[in-house]
Image (cartoon, rainbow, N blue to C red; front, top):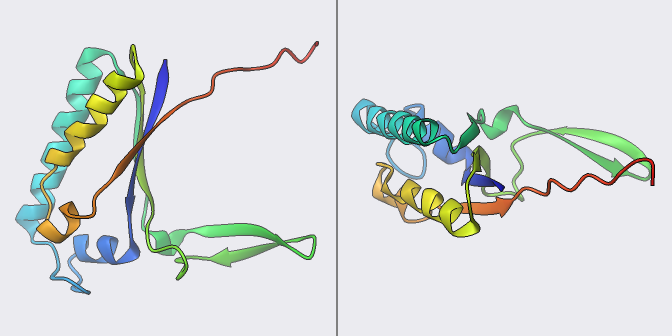
Length: 138
């Protein structure tokens, strides 16, 4: 079965990782390097086990566009969005034997080095991927 593991961040998080102080101090080069090393190792282990299908990190929310119908017309709004404190930051698609295994994989992300205020609110969602494809002939 395939599962998607989703992680989240705010524009402030992206700014602090880029070295810009915000609500909290900017990340140091060592903190950012430690996170990068953890992610490289995490991804390599999943690739070696054959469970990694795909992984991607997303760019900062300021580079987001939302398309939404307003009065029946699609309207494009540039991000970031004040009403959305946290947005999707990255994802992994894994293929493994069970929901429990996918959850074990996601739980390993809690060991990712980061400043304590980031770790305190870090979360990952695990969602099964619906691979049902109805037969277009029926």
